[in-house]
Amino acid sequence: MNFIKRLISRIEVFFSSSNLSTKSFFCGIGDTIIHENEIKVMKYPFKPSLAYPERMFSASEINAISTAFGICKVYIENDIIFISAEKKEELTEFAQRNNIELREHSWNWDWILEPYLDTELTEEGENRIRMALDKVGIDQMETDTIRKEVGKQMYKYNFDTMLWEWCSLGLYDVLSAMRVKYNETAFKTFYQRAIEIDKRRKETA
Image 1 (cartoon, one colour):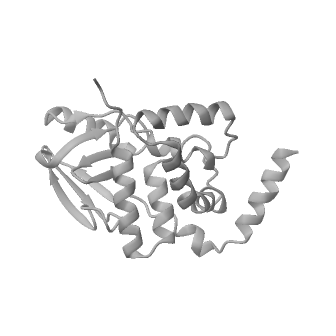
Image 2 (image 1 turned 90 degrees about the vertical axis):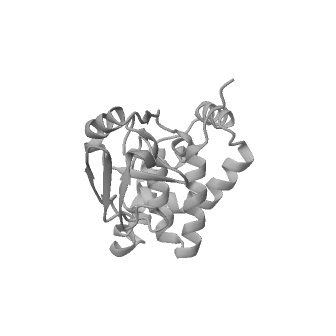
């Protein structure tokens, strides 16, 4: 019965949205060429980014690279650049060649956005997420505030578009979703906060 109710609800929200509004959520990540010690990013969609709309990054500008899960991330000071997972092997070799840290995937946004997946979040699952977020300095009050801000838009992103992602929603997804909602000024502010949240890491002794 719950499945039928969820299915009916998704059909309703889908048909309440125009094709234009749902298509605008998917902005892509542009194109990338990886050289010996430089990475060229082209047609990058997120205007607040250092990579927008095109930029060449030298290896010396890059603090870390993550290829561990999903879309690859290149960590620049005050920014994160997305690169296609298809470039994972090439990007890993670039990092090793240029002595750049290969960083584990940041799960911060994946944990925050878990309620908006196409799956049921149990009380046990929410408690697990709460403890994980606490360890990186994101307490329950901040988590609730973030979810209040992005929740409605994430439902639109995942269900109105019939994406129905059930495994993981992360930084790229929330930026794509909020890019549609906010004007340029508001999105720039959100973008900077989103990047900062992604970069929070568990303190080591």
